[in-house]
Image (tube, rainbow over all chains, first blue to last red; front, side, top):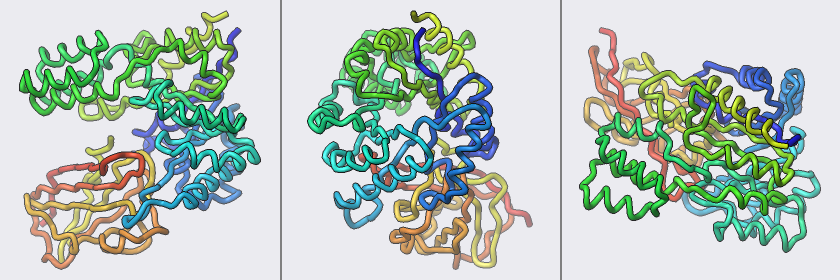
Length: 328
Length: 125
């Protein structure tokens, strides 16, 4: 039986949390109710006292997740290199900021940290001794339009290999496996005035995996597309379908996955992201980390209907149970 | 990602020398005030001068110029802050068209993040 675990990122409930319709504890309780065991958090979203988080607050988090039978699985860090208007953060300041996050991550008892993809590998190399000391794995987020074998990502892999460390690697975001164009994207562009024949063309081009710049030129110049049509074509730049089979080779470098999705159908299938191809590869690799739901569909539907993040996450977990259960 | 929620519904009120309203940050996390490059306010199609705008997340009103170096203050995720327009004369009763454009310096983006909301607001007579 596969040892892939199911978790939820609090990012998934951003609509309800932003509007004060759910509390953090509501989110944790819901995740537990659908059998998820891992909770991923964004301190800068979910901890109002950040960065001055008290021991009492740390204890509250640990006790709350524990009371629901869950554990904290991943800490999503940020790095404000542009904090000052007059200059970028120096290298020393960047290392200090990441060290601050590693320390809070360790205080929370979390062993995985999501590193933003733009953080330089040489900065991370300087953080490795702290990550090792605090036993936190720094996983550089492999987020579209980057992909597993993008040269920028390979620099982190090379750095980890060179240092011989188990505390630096990657953290794939499943948005890189967009096999089909999300219907929920298309629908919103149509509400904004994109004509159905143009949106169908864009979907067809994506389905054929035609490189985005060809489609953008066709829509913007040859078809004289309107604003919504051009904007839709431009989303193709961030809509890659990387090869799921490559996950096996890179499995030693990641311990956590952000299970991005935009919409689940009522029958608990994802019309866009190729989880049916991804999960068998993870199982075959013997991967034992957490698939952490990251629902990002709210921004595509909030103009026309109420957002129900719970139902979306529930459906994704029904799919995970099915796909994980099918593995030997 | 949260554009339609930036101006808090029914929060606009006239003041002795302008008006004030509640607003949220259009971002999925909180942000230090030094990274909020601009809060552009337009009333009935006319842009409010930058130096007439004050921001207060709870630590006291601050000008947009002073926000640029407010390294120890944050606008938290989902939190309502007060944006005021001062020195303009009290806002007249009736309906007005209000827009808010938040320009954020998000470190990992190659360009500024601009988040805009526009609402018709009603001021009681």
